[in-house]
Length: 426
Image (cartoon, rainbow, N blue to C red; front, side):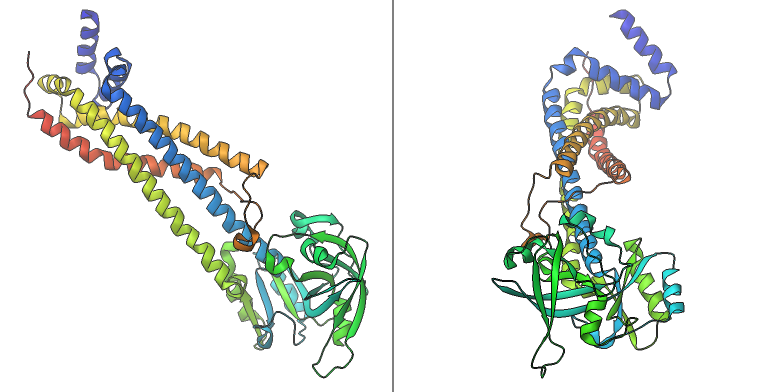
């Protein structure tokens, strides 16, 4: 016992304040008295609270960011990030008037740094009739250069259609196929009407070669893919004419800047519409996720700080005699404060470790297992998507540690100063 006290006094004299506070904090946590004290039990509760708080924050971030990315991705996949069309077509889901960009103009747009692909498409409303029933919808005509790989995640059966030379192959959603009682390999008729006065609509017999399912009711209940030349033939348009151009970007974050750049480059009779404007209600809705995540983050940090402050204050009250002894030996309030903050940091880090572990278990189980299902009519997805990057996790942990220790500094300082007024009894 005497040897241990001698070592402690030598450390007290020789070590720098930062090293000394860490040394004393370690001695406190390794002592038998500490392990069986009241504060030890409270600290376990605080650790559990911190772990659950971090776990809930990670779950909120993963599901919030995942849902935002998935909805953004789907709307861009089926409509492009940007749409170039005439002003008459802006408020219409079908192509009313044809346009044709010059080759030099197409090349200049495709050469922009953030532009991944530029594709001319034509939308045409039609009536889809099978042998047993019929459904209304929109036919999206695409060219042979259309990047079908962006639909790979949504393919359920069959293959992508051939679109050259008015090919009559189509890609149908599982929702429409179910309603029309169609399968891959079946044929059905599409009726197109160009004018209200047209007595007999144009008919085209097409074959289902593939089925997709996006989980987005607006697309699954109406949209089919096929040849642009087939629609142009019905509209009596030339081969180089399209209803609009869809621009797919590499980085969604530069959407506004790229839209402004393209708008300045195209002729004055054309407009550039961002997907965020076309589906403004949806994007306003998913923007609210950021506020929900922020509220959860604040609540969980507040709960964690309160629990940690309670645990540390109980520990300080239990160690009032030790505080008086250290002050008698010449220790400053700042040194004593740092000792208890070291204890708080260790407790907090233990809670962070378990919280991150639980959060990552949820993340990977949902990412690979897809066990949480959602109603696509409400959330536009069938499975709750999750997304978190390593930098986001690291930044979150640093933020929580920094904010928590900052707010723990003041209550610890106040209590230690009040304890300093007490005399130590020998």
